[in-house]
Length: 171
Image (cartoon, rainbow, N blue to C red; front, side):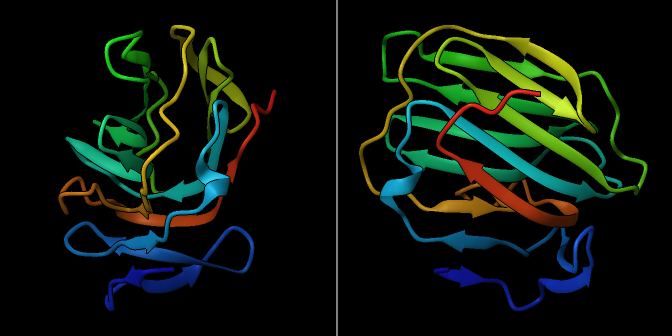
């Protein structure tokens, strides 16, 4: 853990305690790790909130030439995976359809298996699609939870049990 905003507060989570993000200045930054450098990925979390309009980051990893970002966009999930610059740049750019702004806990999962992206809400496939390609895996890059690297796209809600796997999990 590199840093966590001082106003991020613990809340009753789905399993023990989660964290509450105020949508203004709450975030978690986890230092770069070789375990985050993977060609396939699954990101899962429990989220709860009334998210509102715009982008609200759940988790992301940013490198100078590529990004993967799992977020809430206008109350539905968005999964974005960029590849190595110039070749299949947008590996996944999927937007779900299930609204999750009901202030209830939802298990959300984003997967990229090297050819397709998948987004699940509460165990049900919400959207899929994408292109084959390689996720950029070089360059130091932290894992960010609840914020985008520029400090915007702040999440207003709660997050619990964030998991990142270096394999594509199936339903």
